[in-house]
Length: 441
Image (tube, rainbow, N blue to C red; front, top):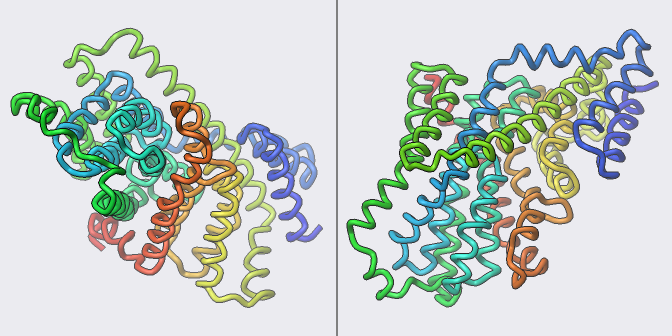
């Protein structure tokens, strides 16, 4: 059986199982186990179990539950609410100021959690009702929350970048540092778009009434400012200890989780319910990612063992005679198309065995390519028919926000993300500058 036919059978089987609603880790692991059994016999059926030893020996994975715990602890204890209240008071005089504050909130939540889900939940439950009550345009603010929450998978400590590092065998720290500048560029583009739209049409984002702002004393403003600084202190301490070499990556994540607990205790919000909810959500998310990693490693081992990854290289370079940049653009287009139907982890498992060796062979930097992949995941999060943030917004939005409103809201933000991809592709140094600076290259 040729490599091309094996590749077609494995990936088409995987796609069919995913599109029929099977769990991602179950579909990936099943296809890998069956392929190993059919190709090499029953002596290799244990390959899915061998993948567990790779996971147990990869200590950076311990950061997953700790970072997730930190984010949910801050969310459940109400520290994120304090943060939004701070933006609410300090930016109320600016047209569209609360929407701009929501983007700021999403950036900070991203830096606390590393997931899109937490930012989406906080934005939809805390920010959205307040924005609608203040007369903000429902279509614009719905897009703001969906796009802003997607920053969680680009800005460190991104959990998706940890998965990419595991599958692509790349350093987690370099990937995190590489995501900082593109993430801030995208957040800035979001803010500029909101500001310009609200300046041209004040009805979209009216400023708060002067009489309401006058009721907030300077003492109250500074009290809220102190409350909002807590997440900055936790994140700054955690990353500062790590970047200066005082703590390891795992130890830094433990510092962040401990800091979140202490902050909740100081604010007298460390209740049994908060602890219980945080632990349950952390366990659910962590287990999901761990099973996906196990399945992905098994799938990659089978595919690498076949040597079938050479099939895609021969097809693109020898049969179709494409240039390296044409191949890269085709990869990005395939990401966007796959992302319309699959989630980010499934898409990563499908494309990693095919694309990453080819990217390295073509002379492109795999760290830079990882950031391009994550940005396309952000687009996938807010584009139909499969989009996590679309589903969450539909479930959490009030009745006056229709499905049509949700779909309309994401159009300008998808455009901004595409512009960011083009900029990162045209200027790779924007991605690689910070990792190179830190490692003294």
